[in-house]
Length: 341
Image 1 (spheres, rainbow, N blue to C red):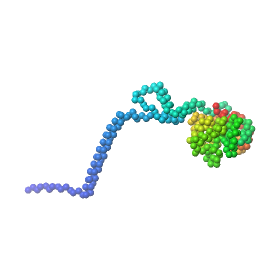
Image 2 (cartoon, rainbow, N blue to C red):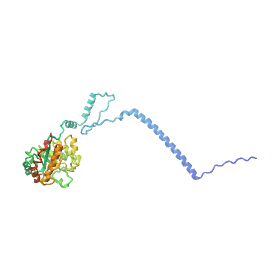
Image 3 (cartoon, helix red, strand yellow):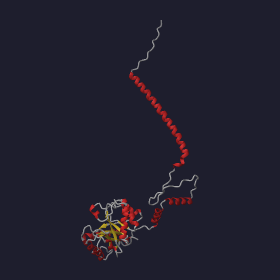
Image 4 (cartoon, rainbow, N blue to C red):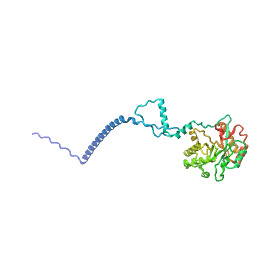
């Protein structure tokens, strides 16, 4: 009698195997769910994006911002007409006029006026020219000493301060002179000069000081800085001052008391020539040392067409200039205004 095969009984799984199986199922289900969600999101996004492109594609073009030469922005641009506009030379001109109306009128007029003005250029001739400026002038005796030289030397006069409350009166009767404006230095002891301009001053305060200078020196045209290594190196402060000086009819000559001066960049930005001191002649107060500096200045003038040097009203400087006629024989001594046209 044949025996029936024994039924195989399933092997019992250990608790650890059961936990592993459950985790595997959960992981598989999670992946499937994530895939389904991503697929649905992608489909919905494509449908929405296609609709958006069809309905709003014309709104992607942003209105242009128009700027003039001194960075004045148009606040708004007229809305586009629904009808297609044929662009011609005439319509382009009309658009420009509309844009100009949006720009603040005083600013626009100022820009056009600046563009029409002659660019200030340093004058160069066959014979080299040398400008000698004497800074720190504040007494009548110093003016008399300069006049006694009987040569073209430009005095730069201090505005009134405690030791010379009427120094501005020295300019009366002078045709060729400058204003020597105290400006902030890296050396604190030089910042004690009366009303020294500082980088911390507001625009209003700087403009007010320039107007005050104009009142005291009604016929002055040229200004250079007394010290000012910090002020002239600060673009924002120097730009504010330069703008104020220009508005009051002044021309700024850079004494160049620092290699970081921003005046060149600012002057060229306005279309002006940049004129600066080439060398100081009396850092050493002896006649031979000053003559040596003057010889160097003449070489620079011959090389570049002109040169600007600065000295001070020391007795040694006056003596050196008075005995330097042979040094100047091949060049023309001129006042500061004679290198401009």
